[in-house]
Image (cartoon, rainbow over all chains, first blue to last red; front, side):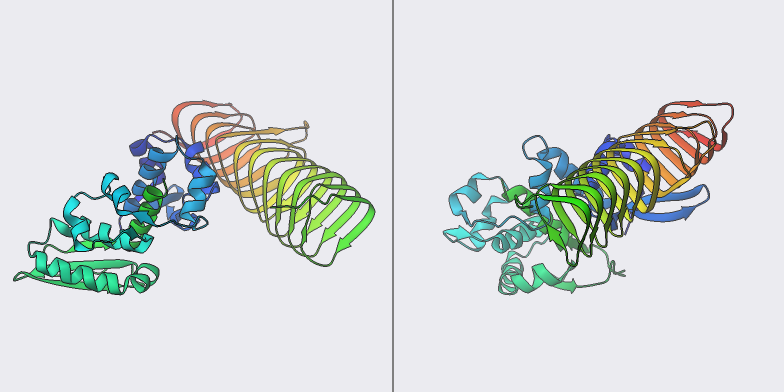
Length: 199
Length: 194
């Protein structure tokens, strides 16, 4: 996984040391993301690049409306989730492709429903065969609890209009000798949905 | 989280289990064989916590020893503090500190009068001063904060926005965003503007 150094992170995001460490202290940035590596100058701190940039983005977006304690409770699963009505979901602008909801019309959607729909939304434009998308959606939907709780990554590839997926539990990254692999980070997606839909 | 039962210790008390209570006021010696979860923890004397301490505010004259982590809003120690790590908003220590891992805080003011150590300090504003004329040193691997004003610190890496390195410091690397001042008596190996 690509890493970014602390100093590059601060420059890139414009946040201060105080903010970075406050968010760590409040549980908004996991301690595991602070990776210490020996360097020529002594020790430098690195972060998983995609994860940290995404997380900081979300925090900056929400911090003026939500207290850090609330944000922390959400990320750390301490707040429960009320089902969302289809009207609210349609109004929310959560999905890039609004037709995603047609995959599964319901009165109310659970957190897991929304995660799976958003996952499909993220890959929707990249897969031409919409039939395959529907099949994939059904598969994810039927196994949503297991996938959301136990799996870390999904790799997708389309060949000859057929969609294949690999679900990964533990490993950080797989290397492929194929072009056009789509990678979905489930943990990241779940955290982001939590932050978005809680409000 | 803590309930409203206040605890006053006059003399010596040992709790054989973790304790959750309101305000704790100690005059003497207080030991908890477990975690302490309280509102305020204050007093004079010696306080020993076998596991972690989660308190709203801590204000102690004397010795505070916590085997695990300390979580508090305001932490004020006049004397000695020993812990695995400290997470707090405003930390004000006058005396000696011996911290295994990190201090993560908003503000730290440390008036040192004995050799001290902490693995890393991270926060927004860090002030470290040597109380007496006798040279005492704070040993630490790194200090990372927006404002850093230090003296008598031996450290590998300082990362800050505005950094003032006072007398008697021995620093391997300094990286600063905006400004730096270095006292002539201090040794800095590498200095880099970010």
